[in-house]
Amino acid sequence: MVRALIEIYGILKTLGAVSLSAVLGAFAPALVELGLNLSTFQKWVIGLGVFFIILAGVTAFLERRAQGAARETNSHQVQKDKIKQLQEHNKHLNSEIEERDTTHANRVLLKYALEEAQEEGTLLRKGEPSKAAVERWESRTRNLIEAALGEGHTNHFLSDDGAFPLATPNPTGAQYQLDRRLQRLDWLLGIVDSLTPIQLRPEFNGKEWTRKQ
Image 1 (cartoon, rainbow, N blue to C red):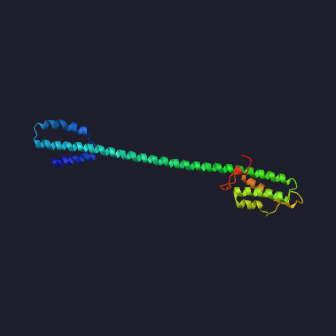
Image 2: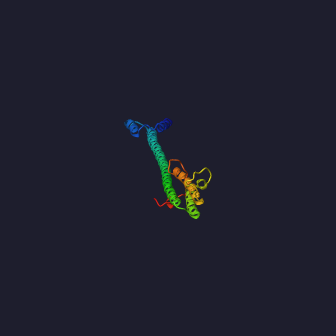
Image 3: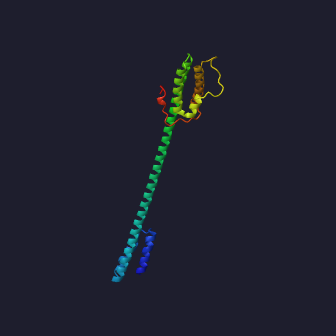
């Protein structure tokens, strides 16, 4: 009989679906009625069986609570991980947007600086500039291009390669040099002021090179 009660306990613990109140409600009236005609040993065995039934119900209840708490904890951790991933993704997007905004702003400022250099060179060309004045203008413009775009565009600005139509007949050496640089500068300005992709140097700060902001 004890063995049978132990087996019942195992079944109840495994199923975990029998309510403790339901078990006691079903067996309590019978136990009270039988208790009047049972021996002490039989009462002890039945009492032990009731104890196992109660223990099975309590154990199943605690296990269900533990499993629910574990699922809740796991779900909470998954949500925290998702929130963290979203925050990192948003941070990355914000960084990219900020970088694009900075690059665009510097490109606009470079355009302004090149236009100012072009205006200065054109004004210089209207007179009879000395070689020293042309070289000072050329040096400032070269430094601007190198700071913004690097060596490749600087070399193109300083190059005398290729056919070049004379702006005026019989120019002086300084005028010819200035005309060549203005031609290269006009080409570069057209690139900067277009949708053509260009690679600005990361350290370039356009605010340092133009009066316009």
